[in-house]
Amino acid sequence: MTTLRLPRQERRKSLSEIQDTRGDRVFMAINLIFLLAILIIILYPLIYTLSASFSAPSAVITGKVTLFPVDFTLVGYQKIFEYPTLIKGMLNSLFYTVVGSSISVVLTLLAAYPLTRKDLPGRRFLTILFFFPMLFSGGLIPFYLVVRDLGMVNTRWALIIPTALSVWNLIITISFLRASIPDELWEAAQLDGCSDIGYLLRIVLPLAKSILAVLFLVYAVAQWNQYFLSLVTQTNPDLAPLQIVLRNILILNKIDLGMLADVQRMADQQALQEQLKFSSIVVASVPVLMLYPFVQRYFVQGLTIGAIKG
Image (tube, rainbow, N blue to C red; front, side):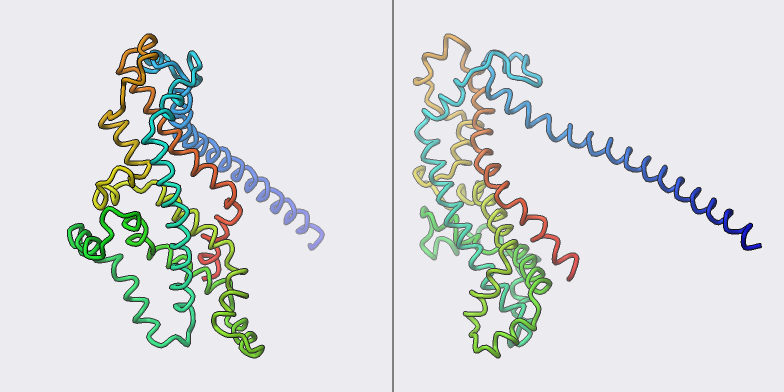
């Protein structure tokens, strides 16, 4: 009897494996088609923007640009970088991004580390105080009054201090530290005579490189795209970030057309303004895109380790 059942069991097993394999193949094929469709939907506007920025203004305004540049030219980038306010805006955004992101990362780590310590008095109460602003906010007018009373209106600190700490990033950091740094390390460090600051600098920081890279990337992107806060707290154009300068170019068309006299032979004012929009978008996007590859290997690890182990 056993000699007759074994072949049947083997045949049933092989048949189920074949069915599972076919089902997996069908699922993978459908999934691949779906993801390719999403990729095309997302990728085409980016390619079109890049192609339009290298195309002639007349080709952009007449709709001749579809996938590749038409009548390749760099006139858009040339005139954008001749606009003096744009260079100043890029330097301002670079300052806000580097200084603001560095301060934000330090504050986030200094707030997250104590909240992971079980021996911290009032830890739950402090955690609630941090999370409370996520549910309730005073509104725009009280926010402006606080910034004004602190003397930060029309200063660079108005774009750095109010957004120095993100509660969502704080939650991610707390989850990461709890999942990746066991309490036994602190006990071992205590036996060796290590202080709290020494433990933070010598043990926690080296083990938290991935989350620090993720935090810097997230804060840097937010600072680079800073727009509304500058509108509310800054009226000095010398302090305006890049996004405000682009707003003036793209929406208000505040650009000196006198310096574009040599381009008027190629296209009219409207065509040139349309082409400058795409060039401005590329100029504003490239710095952040260049930053991402350096922290890409830390990004997934920093965001998922808390979800896997927490």
